[in-house]
Image (cartoon, rainbow, N blue to C red; front, side, top):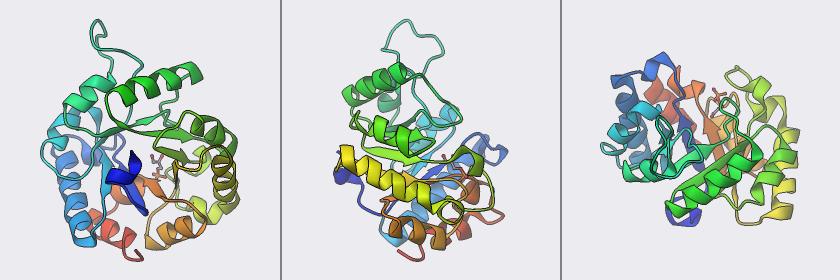
Length: 227
Ligand code: G3P
C-alpha cells in the first residue's frame, strides 16, 4: 500500500503534544508542511494532536496520520481511538507503539488488523533493531526505529548511533523486503535526512526539530533541501 502514496524519501512530522501545536498551532504547522511539500514535490506526512486530527485532515491535502490508535472496534469504546474513526475523519494512517505511547505486543497485532481493515497506512515504532525486525513481520507499511535516549535531543541518531540504523535495515530486510524503514530521534535538518537515506532507510520520522523550531517553515525547507 505504501508505494501508492509514498515514495522514498518519506518525511513524517509528528507534532506530539507540544504547546506550539495546541489549538490553532496545529493547522498552522500543517499548512507550512503542505506548502513546502507542494514546492518540493514530495509528500510530507504529519501527525497532529489527536483532538485536532479531523480538523487538520479536512483542511490540508498532505497525508495526515494519527499519533496512536487503540485496539478497539466501533461501538462501546468510550474515549478510545478506533482505527475506524481515524479513517472516517479523513486521516490516512497511524503510528502504532510510539515509544511515548507503548502498547503490548498483542495489542500491536490487534491495532494492525483493525487499521488494515480501515485501509490505514501503518507505522509501527520500535526502540531498536530487534524490536523493529519483530514488528516488521506484522507487515506494516513502515517500521520506524527511534532510540529513546536520543528523542527530543540535539544530536541526530544518524550521528550519535548510525549503527542502530544499519542494524535495523539489515534485520528488517531479512524478514520483510517491502516494508519502508524510517529512523528518528534528534533529526533536525537536511544533512540528517541525507545521512538517514545513505544509511539505507526510506526516510525519517521527526518532531522537535520542526515543531519547536524558531522558524518552522525554514526548518521544513531545510529538511528537504538535499532531496
Ligand atoms: O516521533 C518522532 C520522535 O519520537 C522523534 O522526536 O523530537 O527527536 O525528532 P524528535
